[in-house]
Length: 275
Image (cartoon, rainbow, N blue to C red; front, side, top):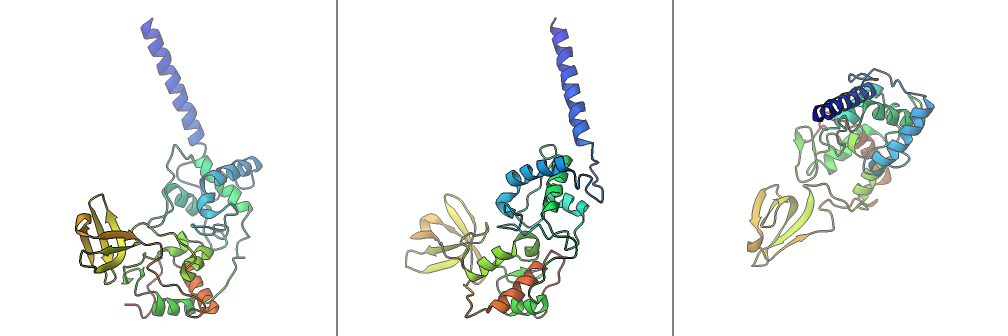
């Protein structure tokens, strides 16, 4: 009798695999150019639910961006369905956008989400234009390049911004520049170390454990310190990045700078005049 139960288990497992393959292979792994579920009412409804559970924390309930970028404009900016599919499946390098591998996320799941987002997006060619990106490039080169890197040029004290346009919403970037956003990217949390003689070492935290902390100081030197050798190791609540209020960066300059930052998708050359 035992062998009969074994055979039954094998049959059930094989049947389950066939069903799973049928679900996952309804749409090929190599995505088609156009979303096969675009306009499908059932797919849009399912996609709305999946989007709210999986995507809204970063991109917002309206998909206009919180920590992640506004994704209602991606088609208007020339992205294809296939490219967006790959971005969701594989993630976006050097950003907080994670990969969503199968089988946990099926091809159908991705196409449903895209079908939903397409319904709340403007038609191709209607992306809003605001600010002068060329002028914003000049603002970046004179104001930001000392700490932030684009491509192979710029400083290292702040995050690399080569792909910031693909990783951050315009509103989130504005809040960060104006100093009204209190979150810090991992590896750039501000920290102050105080030595036994009272000397303060300020910088950004690169790594830490229970016994030591690694810091990049304001001269971009990376040093490791034992906690027991320090009087204190204090995580700062205020960013190491200066606050650029309207008195130091006008609204027009900010608008230009944001337009330039939005254009940075990982293939843009470093700004002219950058070191």
